[in-house]
Each structure stands twice: as C-alpha cells, then as structure tokens.
Image (cartoon, rainbow, N blue to C red; front, top):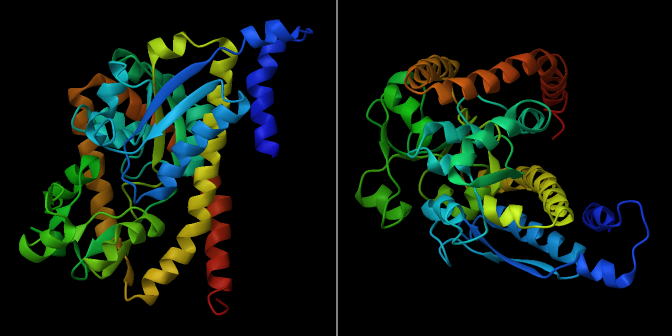
Length: 365
C-alpha cells in the first residue's frame, strides 16, 4: 500500500504543481494512453516476467486505468532478439530485456546489463543513478530512438552447469558450452568452444550433440529452466554477471508524447519494480539452491587458477574491443573506474561482514 501511495503521489502530484485544480481540469490532465510492452524473456523466467507485469500494474493503478500498458510475453508480438528493433521503430512503445541480448549488434550494450568482472547489483544501481551510468547508456541508446530505464536486477549469478568437474584451466579446452556475449568471447580465448542455443532444446543438445556445459543464471532461474536435468556440476561464481541489470526500453517519440506527470509516473513505477525484482531474487535463490542440492546438484566453486586466467583474459578482451571502438572504451573506463572506486569500501565492509558470518554460521546452518 505504501508503494501504491508513493506512485500515486509521484504520478499525480505533478498535476497539481502546488495549486488547487478543479475536477474538470484534473480530468484533462489524465488522458487515456494505451501502450504495449514486449518482453524478451520466456515464461519460465517468472520473476523477470513478474517485474514487467508489476511495472505495468503500478502505472495503471496510479492513473486509475488511464495509462494502460499491456504486457506481452516473449514471442507473442515480438521475438526476444527483435525487441530493441521493435521499440526503435515503434512497433511497440516499450520493451523489457537484458541488453546483453544485443552483444552481436555491439558489445558496448552489455554495459547496460552485465559484463565479466563488473559491478554487483548495488554497485550497478549506484553507477546508474549517482555515477555516469544513466547518462552514458542514454547516449548509447539515442541513435536507436530508445530511452532506457533500469527494470530489475538478478543479483550475482552462478557460473553454470557442467557434465564433469572443472579443476584446472586445461579442463576447459574444447569444452562445448552454451554461452554467449562477452562471456563467450572470454571463454573462447580460454579454450572453450562456445555453442549457440540448440534448436531442439538443451536435453537433446547434451544427449545427441555433445554439449557439455551451459551458462547458468541464478539458482531460482536455473531450477525453473530445468538446467539441473542436463548436467550435475553447478559452479560459482558467475564471474561474467556480478549482477545482471534488466532494462525497460521506451520509444523516444512515445515518451515525448506523454504528459510530464505521466513521464514522472513511469519513471517512479520502473524504480519501484526494479527494487522489488532484486528483493524477490534474494528471497528465493537460497531455497532454490537448497532444493537443487537436495535433487543431486554438485555445487562447486571455480578454482582460483581458473578465476585468475578468466580475469586476465577479460582484461585483454576489453583492451582489444576498446582499441576498435571509442564508445566501448569510454563506457569501459567509466564503468570500471566506478567499480575500482567502490571496491575498497565493499571489501572493508560488505565482503568482510559476509565472510565472517559465513564462517561463524557454518556449523549452525
């Protein structure tokens, strides 16, 4: 109820502007607007779907149904790879995606979502709202005629599912792994043979096509996707996604046509749904991990030797991409500069606190 009250104040308070308004004038400032939102996520990823639906619900409730955004699942009006183009051309007014999906278009888009050895969820929020993140990503999306808003963050992800144990860097050589984006680029240089999503499904790819590993997300999402059914060794951490930010794409023309108080409301609704998404992942991942372990998942940590090679390989990938594209270099420098400035504080407080509790509670839970 408090969130709804806040959203109503955010959206409707702008109408009053500090002065009394007659009922007819108030009605005029509440025009009927109908939008469509195309999701880039499959139905199985229900927390991501729920985030988009919550956003639509908040907007509708705060305007008594005057501003209605209809939520469409992936593939109902637009296939996941086409969401950016659909919003850009105003086939739909808005979309909900992970910008990592557009790595092939330009790797720089990944900075709007997650990159190897990048920011965690809290740091990403800080970079976007208090650092240069929102300004730089807005500039990035401007040629696409898109205005972006954070709309959910999964938190730190897992490293994936493997049919065999990974004990040393050499174990990755020629490993057939379904992985894409910057993670795929780094892992390929480490000897992995990246594979594209299998048309016949994961189970068939493992059984008939020799697939040996698949990149994970978090425990809750992985359980929903049934990844534990195709491989048993479950590795952490997902060093390519310290916190994957999901994004709301809004067509620039559609945005500019909105009254200012509707714009304020949309932004407030996105912020509320964004925060709720991370809270829901944090609440559900522990139980999902326990269930996966109970069902036979063998939980492992990547050896330090593999993490070190991954880190050094990542730095070379960034150097090479930056040399080819000044936009990538500028985004990288801002993003990683912010990460480096954050780490002394997080290491002193958050990390040390978590490490101590992990040891102190190890015999009790």
